[in-house]
Length: 292
Image (cartoon, rainbow, N blue to C red):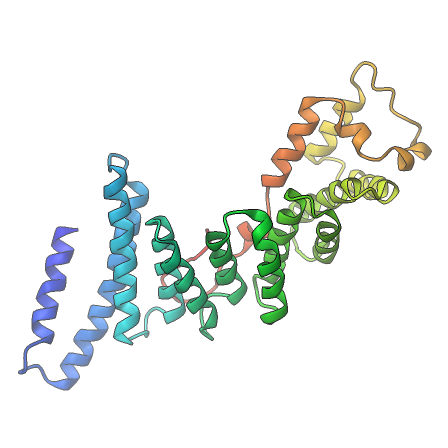
């Protein structure tokens, strides 16, 4: 990193010379901008991967990373990497440096740029930093859905919102958002998790018959899913006495999941589980993949 910093200083000295022609200066500045971007990546990678750093050293790496991305954004040369990605990368680095206000500011600036990061993705990161309490971020997330047009991350954003609602006992909202995203992803794994979570939300919302129907649909559509196997295992426990199929609707999924700690653990694992975000990748020529 010291060699890279020395390179920065050398380029700055060249740029400050009155003898540098305008065309050469432009080329130097483009190279300088790209070097700043690479420097931001380097500092961020150092913070992520060097294990023997102290906390202060790690925070300093992230702060320098954010500063490098800010410097890139300020230079105004975005041929090889978009301004939106630089702002987003700065936001991530500021968040890792525990500079919350600057992180939120950069994420929101990235959301306003027309090219680069999906606006709802940038806003998702902003709100998760700005509102650590899940209950506090639900209303701002709903406002994002009203404010921003649908983009490549909107469905994943709705899923994050649905999970938040489920986790803070906003069950009716969780039901609504899970229903909106059921079947919208090409991955059966994602759809299976969403369908199962819908049954959980319905059960907790007191809609036991519909919950049982959705759970039955889940077991029918995904008979080889790990959660189906777990439900079958719970059914087979001594004393379980599973009801006849026609009576399932009046019992609800609490019968299946409430009889063992393993069943409860299944829900906990589920709430943290696979989601659309992990499938979302920015298809771009830029040098940054902003997937968290």
